[in-house]
Length: 89
Image (cartoon, rainbow, N blue to C red; front, top):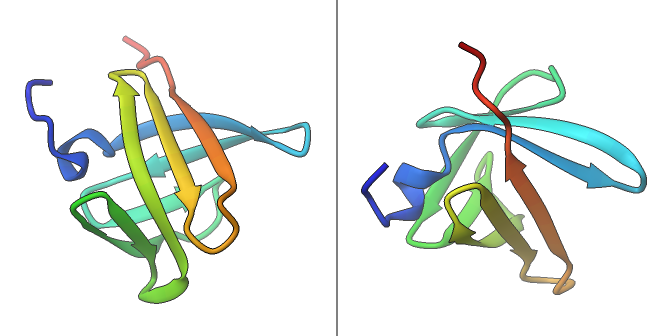
């Protein structure tokens, strides 16, 4: 993975923990699916992520390393850390 653009780095499977629960999140080029729930569309404009066109879901996305993604809720300032899931095979 040579691209430094967030839109190229977000695709794939990620794991995180919220309130003590493990959450699996998968991003394709245009959709995000959380723990097997129906996929929602998303837009990533630079480092600003918006889910299903809803501005209240806007997050700032950063990739401090290849295997870590940080999303910050712009309304609450809450930081959410994701780790890239290992690819089987």
